[in-house]
Structure formats: C-alpha cells, structure tokens
Image (cartoon, rainbow, N blue to C red):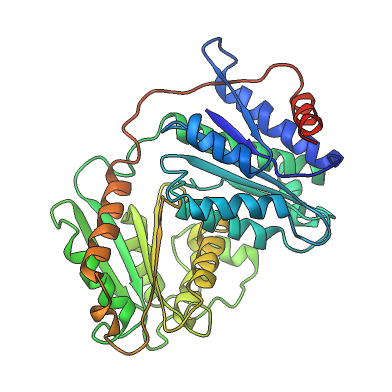
Length: 400
C-alpha cells in the first residue's frame, strides 16, 4: 500500500503537480504494472491521514510526504497532520517513508523536511537512506545534481525525487534485517565523561540490555579536542584521500573511527545538549565523515542516538542529527531512532522515574531494528490508472 500525503489548499502549482506525477509514475515503475497491484492513495488532510492509518495501512505500507511550501514556508494542513500524528502514538509503526519538499523561495525546505522526518520517525516510520529530495524556488540547490546527471535543474529534481520514492518502495517491498550473519556490530561515538555525563550513564543502562553474543559494541571517545574539524580541502584532494579510506588531517578519525564505521552495521551517537547543538567534537566527527562518504555508501547502516538536555531543546539536536547524518550522509533512520531525555545535574538521569524501564525499551528497539525490520515477506504492488494529476485535482475539487 502506497500513500502519498499532499497537504495543499486551492490550485495546484505546476511544478508541484509534476512532482506528484513523478511520485506516482515511479510507484508504477516499481510495481512492474502487474495486475495484482493496489492503488496508491492520496491523503490531502488530517482526516484522510487518520482514516488511512486506521483502516488501510498495512505492515509493509510506504508513505511519501510530498509537500509544497509557499513563500511563507508555512503549510497549515501539514501541521494539522503532524499534530494528529503526535496524538496517535505509533500510527506509522511498520511503515517506510520518503520526504519530498517543493518550495517557492530559497528558505524553509530543509527545515520543514527535518520536522517531518522527526515527527514520522517518532510515530514509528522507518526512513531508508536517500529517501529525501528538495527543491528551492530557484532550483539552485540542484545545480551539482543537474551537472552530474547532465539534466536541467527541474529534471534533476524530479530524477532525485523519483529515486527517493523508488528507494522507499523497494525497501518496503523487500525489507530484510540490517544484519543476518553472526553478531551485529554497533559503533558508539561520544565525547563526554562516562562517569558523570547523563547521556553516557543512560547509554550504560541501555547497553546492559543488549546481548553481548548478538551485538558487538565498540565505543570511541572523541573528548579533549582530539578530532580536528574539516577545513574544506579542494574536492580533488578530498577525493584522493577518500579513495584510500583516509583524510588529509589523519588522527583518530583515520586511525580508529573510519575502520570501525566501515565494519559496523549501526552508528550510535551520544549527544548531550550544548547550547542547543551537538558538541564541537561530535560536529567535527560529522564533518570529517565527508571524506569517507565520498567512497562508502552509508544507506545500509542504521543511525541511533541518545540526546539528553539539561532543560529543553532535545528536539533541536534530534533534527540536527537527522539533517546531517540522514539527509546529508544517507544513514538509514529506523523507527524511534532517537531517544530524548531531560536531566541537568551530573548523574541525575539515574534517579529519573522508570529509567531502567526506559533503557530496556530503547535497547529492545535497537535489537529489533538490527535484526528484524520486518518479517513480512509479502511484496505489495501498486498501480496507477489514468493521469496521476487527474486524480489529485479530482480529489482537491471534491473536498472543497
């Protein structure tokens, strides 16, 4: 079952209509246009969304958020859907998603995409790598993409969007465990004091519930400024070192982090809130991944994170990690990937109510995502009849 969320009022802008057409045509491509297919469903508002979740959603459903933003960057119908999503816990559990954002100016597209990803992931939706595409008003953000594909800016955006939809559909069709042979490997990156950091202390509780015979964990501490930040080498220099699995600046990233990440099935980031941002060392780690990213595909590696704030703002860090590691680096985002908590004084996390239970629940999610994404081997198919834009416009007119 494919659902396409199209929260728009009034007339359909031309480029947005073409985007919806791209979504549905790529769904048809994945289906192979066979007879035993199911029709894609267009969800226009929160009522459509809730009805689909309650009556039509299946364990292997794929949901694509295709969102148009006007010059204000505000889409009230989308916000209404996100609101209902928060009130209906796990309403997207078992689903696979993709996010496409079409904007009218140079702002807001990435910011809105982060909010969508954050919300649908908390609702239980899995986001595979490379399932995001955006277009700013001028399409200048597609310049490099267009150059590499030898396409116009608009054609490059639609090609990118089409690939994002195909990745999500193919993943939903044939989901397999991230790791199947022998123990899974999880790399944990942190930059704090293990004895006092609330983030590290919660991770210690979580780790206690992860079976050592099934999940091999390696921890690397990037504390005390050991990681030099990326200084922006010329592309040719970065590519040269990348081909060797290295980086011009060397250090712990090349000696320890790169080899450990290459061997891992999942990445865990321990990230306390530093002025509503990840710490300098964690940010340097993310930036330095660029050299490895040029050579290695991260889409088969899962991203987890524990975020602890002293007062508030954990969602800001969660969205920062989603943007930098999922959107930009292509790590897969399993359902409920980021655990957010609040604790201020050193060690305070250990006295929080039901903290052991919280740790056990999160550990179970890690295990489940590493080994059993979806046991349903049934491959769902999709079919589109008539013009996709015809159906969209018809639904818009019927509901006005």
